[in-house]
Amino acid sequence: MSEIDVKLLEIRQDFPVLNRLVYGKPLVYLDNAATTQKPKCVISAISDYYLNYNSNIHRGVHRLSQEATDEYEKSRKFIKEFINANTASEIIFTRGTTEGINLVAHSFVRPRLKEGDEILITHMEHHSNIVPWQIVCEETGAQLRVVPINDAGELIFEEYEKMLTDKVKFVSVVYVSNSLGTINPIEEIIKKAHSKGIPVLVDAAQSIQHIKIDVRKLGCDFLVFSGHKIYGPTGIGVLYGKQIYLEKMSPYQGGGDMIKSVSFERTIYNDLPYKFEAGTPNIEGAIGLGKAIEYVSQIGFDFIIEHETQLLKYAQDKLSEIDGLKIIGNAARKASVVSFVLDNVHPHDVGTMLDVDGIAVRTGHHCTEPIMRRFEVPATTRASFAFYNTKQEIDVLAQSIQKVIKMFS
Ligand code: C6P
Image (cartoon, rainbow, N blue to C red; front, side):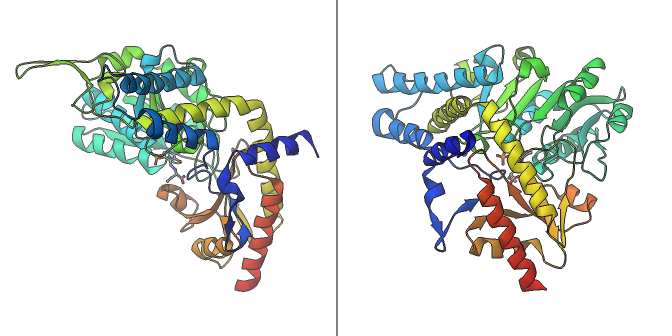
C-alpha cells in the first residue's frame, strides 16, 4: 500500500457515515461540493457542548456561559489563523456564504452606489453571488455587468480588464466554480481591480476546503465561506472583511449583542466583530466549525492538494474514456469537480440510477442556471471529491455510468 492509501484508510475511519451501506452497497459519497461529511471530532465537539456546557454566550457570569464563550471565541481565533487575517475582529460568524454576500451587499455596497454605477461579477457565479447584486441594483439604479467565460469554462481575462471601467464600484467573484470546477486567477483579478481602487469580494465556498487561503496574501477586501463545505456543521459560515471597511459599515441586523448601549433616543453599536452578530448566534455551529478547521489543518493542505489533484485527474481520464459522456468545464486549472452530461439520458435519470448503486452525486443546475444556458444543457450530473475519496470509488462511478448508458441505449 502507498503512503497515501495508508493515510486514506486512517482518515476514512474519522468519518463514520462513510462506513454505511446504501441499498446494501457501500456508500460512495461524491456530493462534497453540496456538503461534506463530518469527522467524529466535529460531531463530538457539538455533542460535548450540549452535554456539558450548553448556555448562551457573552451574557452570563456563570461558569457554563464563560466556557461556551471561550469555545466560541477560540473558534474565531482558529479561523483567523487559518486564513491569516490580521485580527480576530475581522472574522464575522454568519449563517454561510449566502448570508456573507448579502451582508456585504447590504451594508457595504448599497450605501456607496448611485444610478449608473456598476457591479462586476462573472458568468460562473452561484445564484447567491448574482441575486443579492440584482437586488442592490434594483434599489439603486446601478447595473450588474457579467464577465464572459470561454468554452472551456474559463474567465476571459481580457474582457474582465476591458469591463473594469471607472463606473465599476465593486467586484464580486467566485474563486472555484461549483458547477465547472474552474479555479479563477483570483490574485490577478484582485490586483487588477485594486489598481483601479475597486474593492473585491471572493466567494470561497468551493475553495476554502481545497486550496490554502491567505487573505493577506490575496489582498481581498472580503471573503466568504460556509462551514458545511469544510467538514463543519450547516448554518454557520464566515465573512472575512478588512477592518477598515467593517468599521465604517453599518450593521446588517439589529438586536442583542450587537450593541454597547440602547436608549430610545440613541443606540451605540458594539465593536467588531459583534456589531455584525445580532442575536444569539449558532454557538454549537461555530464551535463545530472551529473543530473542523483544526482537523483540516492537521490533515494539512500538502496531502489535500496532492490527493485531490490525483483524484480529479483520475476521474477526468476515466470518465473521458466513456463513449457518449461529455465533461462540461475543461478549464486548465480545476478543483475537485467533474460535471458531465450523457447523450440521450437526462441527468436526473443518471443520478437516480447511480443512487441505486450507492453513489451520491448531484444533478440539476447546481444553482448556476446561467452556466447551464451558456453550455446549452438543461442540467448536469456532478461528481465532487473530498480528501477522503478514493480511486476505487471513481471506478465504481465509471462502472455505474456504463450501466446507465447500456440501460438507455
Ligand atoms: N453550492 C452546491 O451544491 P450556502 O448555501 O450559503 O452554504 O453556499 C452558497 C454557495 C455560494 N457559492 C458557491 C460557489 C457555492 O457552491 C455555494 C453552494 C452548493 O454547489 C449548494 S447549491
